Image (cartoon, rainbow, N blue to C red; front, side):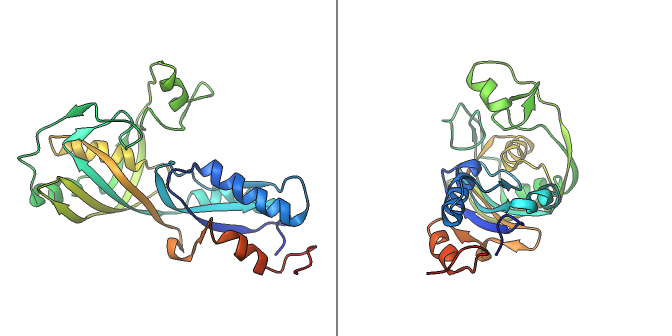
Length: 237
């Protein structure tokens, strides 16, 4: 392997770690292995700290492929809590509103999900990495500023219910979508379309293009994986 010439590394990002945190950890291990201060590294598509799954890292000259990799179709599995919302539409914040759920049935859910297939308009969550005049939306929100975000046209190729518990009002879905789709915002919009509310309790990115999460390396396994590689300029001990 030649990390300066460029390698693509696929990580299974752990829960409660930012994408940048995962990148920084891997970059430190590679740089330390090479005996250099810092290897150029970037990631192809942010995952929220509370999400897990496929995170593609590019090193060296492979960072030029980041835009190409970000454009690939993505697959997610998600669990939604129906009947309530949080400001961030996930568990980062506590519930701020509750809504009726007695009318929600499996049939209504299946009918509603079909409305989200194809090109859709989606307003990103205010607690997101979207930029407004050069500032991250989530940072502005935390400072108490209003964050006016415009709807974007996105593509959802597939969306299906994988399970639904009518007692707990927990809904699990699988989503295949294009670049820029916020699953938290999708959860919000599904809740609204059901005549209720919803927020994410779990999110996992299971695929980016042809890269599946079962073929990714965990952070815990990465040091051993790195030791097994033949790296140009480094003698394996």
